[in-house]
Image (cartoon, rainbow, N blue to C red; front, side, top):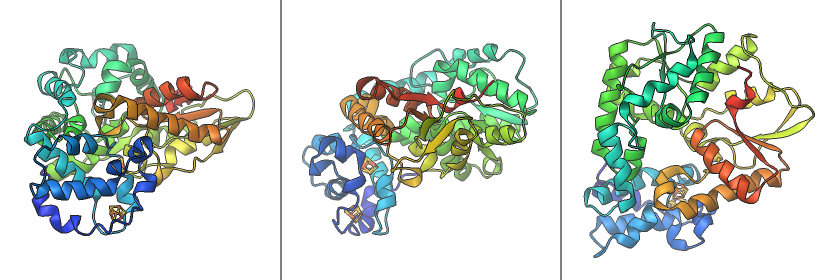
Length: 378
Ligand code: SF4
Ligand code: SF4
């Protein structure tokens, strides 16, 4: 994958009319309230940076990396260019020149050395599979791309997904040993394009070697970035169907192979679309259909939903670069559910789950934040 040099994007940057439509919906601007944290200011600063205008790029870098890369400005801007693509190029140039925030370096080093952002022993990636008992297959008809967070931190959830697929009659197989690596998204968000390309090439080879019929994803972010980039890199990879697990789970429910849990009495339930699932890949039906299948769940749509979803605050590696903004954005997101009187906020992403659950502890103690797997009875 190549990121366009900023200089070659100057024709896009001059398209910005400074209308500020993008500011009203930008989560990072809402968290800070300063004009220099709006998308349009980031566009103007990127143009100035591309013309060599900053003697010291640090203040620009601070503002650019205080963006969740949620891509909402791409949806609201109708000037005919992608602010998000521009920010990706600017991040790449800041990383290449050594001006990206130093907080990003340790986990980029970990992705390079250990194949995951936590610097965990790469050989431990598949340890969760022991919790799946004999529910896994070896035929690679449905090959799981586990993802770093599920594999190292959510082994019970992955075992649950494995049980669900077994119950549906399409058991999962796994990429053996330490051959599955980080999908590369955190590196790309950092501007470290070379590391993203390196991880992508290794994962493509590992998967093609297994000749799977389909690849199944547990993490919205891995799903989104593999879908967006890997097929462009390898035509052979591009022919493999890629599936997010909720699309299969709802089929399993409709086919009576899977059951959902129920609430004791009528309960107002909302759904948070993770940016990478809702806005990036436009997958929003199956999670809603799973919720609607739950007895006594009364479904409530949040105002910011589907392609206009609001970020949980963790996008763009904000947890390491801007933890205070991350929390402020998450607090606003759970506030939306509280305003609707929702009792339960469901999501499909383990990172959103942690971030929004933390926010609920701080500002919405009556709101239950649950991962969609908690609704499935396996
Ligand atoms: S909506 Fe588009 S054109 Fe308007 S200020 Fe934002 S980036 Fe510029
Ligand atoms: S990507 Fe999201 S956080 Fe970043 S400038 Fe655009 S709307 Fe704001």
